[in-house]
Length: 266
Image 1: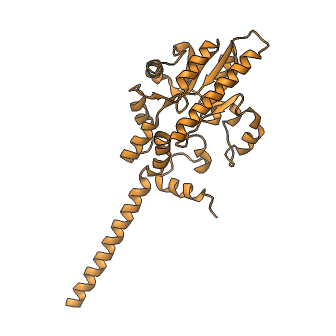
Image 2: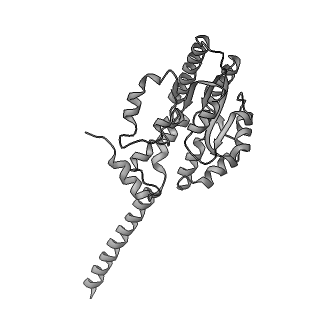
Image 3: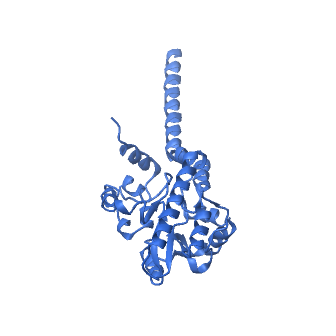
């Protein structure tokens, strides 16, 4: 009888151990900890700051070059994205890590309603430089129309030039920015586009294939650093879609497996 009790205790303890272990693993997988290093890099690295200054310095140089060498009287414009281009929204990713919750429109609106995003390094200065050169800046963002008031408030509080309703074009129905760029082109020549996502530059990048648009970048490589200025964002973007095999609303466990499967090792 004594031996039987011992066996039962051992079995019970083993089951409890593996149950706890399984719960721990599942908790780790459903968390947002995969964002930690990218968010830390974005918030804490001097390299991030240097890259933004580098990008906007290059944008100033190319803007001046294009204005001076322009052979037309058409008004000139620069088109910029907002999020992770002009404004820093990394606190939203930090909040996801803190709470373990995935990104949702609800928690995004909770953040943008504060209108407290900080300007990214060199962004305000660039907008004012463009203004001094007689070039308009248009802010084309996939924020929703409901966010218009708070977005404008945020841009104005950070001191951006052209922070007004005429220069702010938010998403109405289509997430592609093509129609909004075309609207600007009706009255302006767009000489430079700045963003952190390839879709910020041209509709040709909107639908990426399984190689994540590498072939398109190769095809248009001469535009980067000239008409297209790309800024860094390791936290999120359209580049994630091929990683997740273009599947929406996957459970975190499946996302974890797909992320790991796409790594290139030796």
